[in-house]
Length: 237
Image 1 (tube, rainbow, N blue to C red):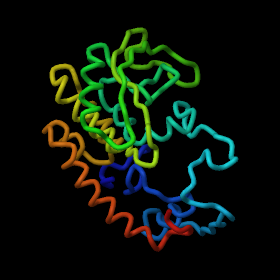
Image 2 (cartoon, one colour):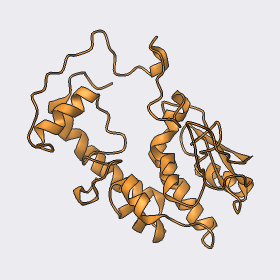
Image 3 (cartoon, rainbow, N blue to C red):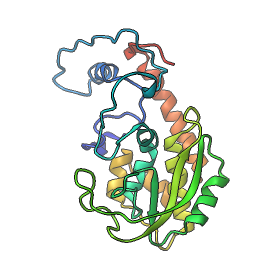
C-alpha cells in the first residue's frame, strides 16, 4: 500500500495477504515505526500451533470476520474477489454466496466462464451462474442490482493449496475489461482504496496482461516477505 492512499480498508503498507499472525503484524507495525507513539507490546505465543494448518484442520469455531464472509470457502476467495467491489459488477452481496459468485445484467456467463477457464488458473474452475441480489438483514442493505437478475460466474476452488485468490481477481478484472469494454466500469476511488495504490486502476485501464501485473506483485511480495523475517514468532509453513 502506498502511504498516500492510507484508509480504513488499507492502513499499513502491507500486501492483501501478508501472511502474519496478529501478534507478528503488531510487532512489525511497532518495529517499522508505522505508529506513533509506539505502545508497549507483549505477544504471548500460542502453544502447539502449526502455521501450515487450514482453519478446518483445527477444532476452533468459525467466527465471521465480516458479515459477508460466513465461512472458510468465502474467506479463501475473498482477498482477490473483493476487488470486484471496486467495479460496477456485483460481487455477490445480496445473495447467500457473496464473493463466490459475481455477475451483472450485461454479462454473458458462458462467455466469461469459458474465458476464465482458458487461463487454467491453478486450483480454480468457473461455472455459469445467474442470481438476483436482494437486501439481506445484517449482510447487505442495498446490494448492487437489487432485484435485477445478474449473469456471471461461480468460482469453484478445486485445490485450495494451489489456488491464488489475488491472481484470480486480477485475471477476472482484466477479462471483464477485455470482454465488456463498453459496459464494464472501474470505480476508481474505491478500487484504489482496496488495492492501496492507483497502480491497479492504471494497469486494468491500459489492459496490461495479467501475468505482467502479477510478476510485479510477486517482486513486491518477495521484498515484503524478506522484511518480515525478524518479526515472525512461528516458523513459516
